[in-house]
Figure (cartoon, rainbow, N blue to C red):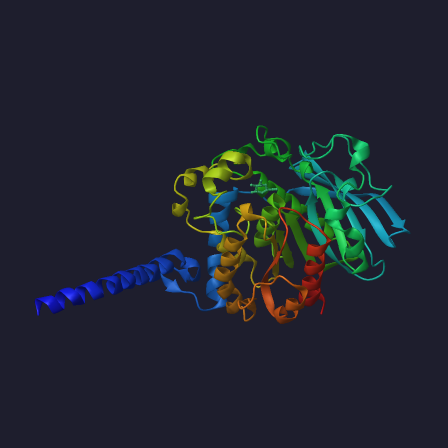
Length: 411
Ligand code: GTR
């Protein structure tokens, strides 16, 4: 008898152990994934979810990215308008002057390209890193010497013209009927760790632990560009798409989560505090990103750097705020630093929120690497495309992005 019990327990022990892991995983997963719970109640309807959205928004703002100010007063001035024969499009430069009460905060210098000169254009809006003149080879884009450019950009003005044309691939965007609008990030504030330049000094009331970091400020700047796009009759305001690479991908995602006027977003290789789950993130986790880029986020986030698990939410909450709008997340299988597998997990976790709205989120079955697989993804509103590159942007990615946008916004 004793022997039987002993051998039973030897046999049972691993089962009990596995069952304990399974149960604790279950309990933990439920605790962890409180996304679809509100005050202990399971969220089953869009109405219930929409009560939770403002709470998620304000938590992201105060705990992660930092509070933004309200919409400032603004003045839009058309400073240039040209028809560009070689590209067969209207090119416009818009000066967006921002004021707090009557004092001038900053000027956003927006370049707008509209290939359809008669009908409304879908428009891809993006921040650029090295100046508007870099996005395409040209002789018409105004250059601003006063711009504080990112360290990686050439300091020689003559080298900047068209420098990033292969990144942006604008010719192919225009050929496929997409308009494009861009401004340089330093118009809001430059990406310099040591200095809080630009808009920050005009909002001393936000100079506190929960006040805005650079990603919030840039997202707020994108919202100002959207304010302008809504005044342009050649812009299809139901087809405004935000794009950003890496830190600008984080910005595009945040700006979309906070503003319903964005119709789709492409957070390209956005990684930590973009689409990737952050609580257990290897390589660039909370501690690391706070150390390397402390100026990107609210100071409050630094409190979580030591205990990432105590962060009240994770990045799938931010993705869920975008629902039911489409997200195409383009990643590089050699871009390990951004942990694309954690982005895919985040998309999967956010997917049930899309289903609440009666549309598909991620269509789980396949990892999408090839063009022919897009056919099976027509209903997906959350899509990760994984291509064989490192931390970069190119025409191959764009062709996937445009195909997906065509399916979602133009079919
Ligand atoms: C990386 C950084 C990322 C990302 C990126 C970029 O070095 O670790 O979080 O934002 O830079 O913006 O290129």
